[in-house]
Image (tube, rainbow over all chains, first blue to last red; front, side, top):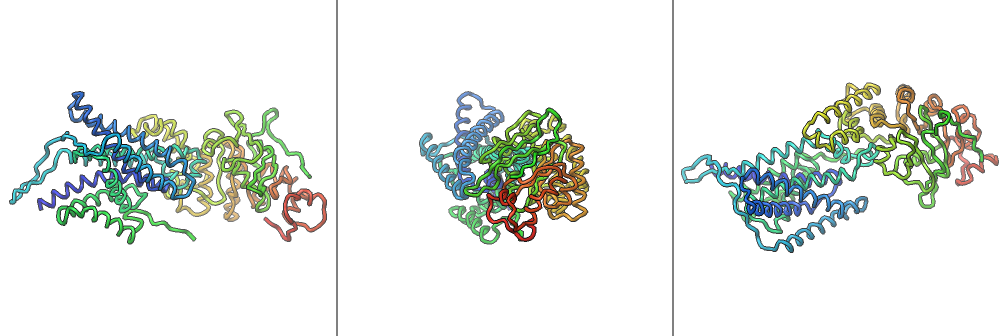
Length: 305
Length: 298
């Protein structure tokens, strides 16, 4: 029981991170119908920026954790937002209106570019970060001396994710930007005729997705304590799986999918073999695509005759 | 070529609301609109009629930034002074020139509620009030007030088109006639100075058509804006239009009051077809291939 509970906690933490990245995929897909394969790399850039900021802040003597965390979050969100905006502007917008495959290939190109760029400027070795937040609660002990730990960091990750998802849902449902995004999603031409600046709305979508990925990057850096230039690929593909599992284009679906993938991965590693945890996640992707291509919460496309 | 002098009813001294001068739109070798000039005034309903394929919708598409015309100038004399429509992107036309339009096939935001459809139309005002949504996210009073005003306006138009009871259902679930009315309400929520309606009466039953005609007259008289109307339902056109422009094969063949147009032999010929050797008809339709059509092409 204790073991199960521990895996549940770990799985939810991991799932929260996947969910944040998945939101970026699903938003971009919703608005321009394209899978932004460079999104995982945005997350990796966010992790690197956060690592550098932590080290710089530490060197500058700012060690009060809440302040440190706030500054790092803001810096990495700003940086990745600029990356997101620039990528959309340079690599995707010129291809809009071209064949569907063109921006997809461009996205893969951007992804390769960012990986190599970071490898070049930061080096290929794994970068460690000393733990920033230590300690936690001990929930229960077991007969076999197994102790269920809920660290402060895990609590922060989950709270921050829930907070962001609530704020994000508010933006989409309540604000005018969100309304414009939903309008563009349904009919860009008509939205433009009503005075919505479609290009700017799409840019904002990329910026929002990138900012969420940055938060995920910050949290992963703190959680695992290591960063390298290649983490974006696997995390990106898993978050994509999460988005597909929840139903691509559906925001609640992305959050749900992220949490499910996190749980599946963590339980698989705990009860089966840890080596094959990625296989479990991707087997889910294959099965969803075969049996339920619209995902758990996705709307099936109804073609009217 | 018969070109009756266009009726201009604008206030003495002031230019017409919309001036279309020598509009030509070519698609490769096809000339969809050929040297068409006309004007539309505010507080008037200007109808554009003509057989299928006459280029009416192409004129609309040029006006609203879908196409950039091959030749021609489209000037709108709105509140902000003259604006050249052919130089603006679609979203700037709605923002700056304040031209709104509806489509032949209904293009509502199907998955949004009826009310939200009307609020999207007020996007620009809300965006400015909320500093690009920042104020909206934190629920600042400045945005709250703007949003209340937007809802108030939406509610006014919902009342006008009798959709108040269904404000919260998805637009896609409205019956057909309701969707048509909602499109007009949405266009009106963007506070246009020129409202372009592409076949608003298509698919409506006679009672709904009559209601639509009354609504359009009300918009013209109460809002004091110009209405540009493409319509095949002649009972509606002849009843409510102040000014009718007739197109055939991309050329303007007649322009004037409904009575003038109704009795214009060229128009009758274009609609009913004629296999005679009338010089004027063949001249007018020279640009087009064989026009000898039996039966009406409306």
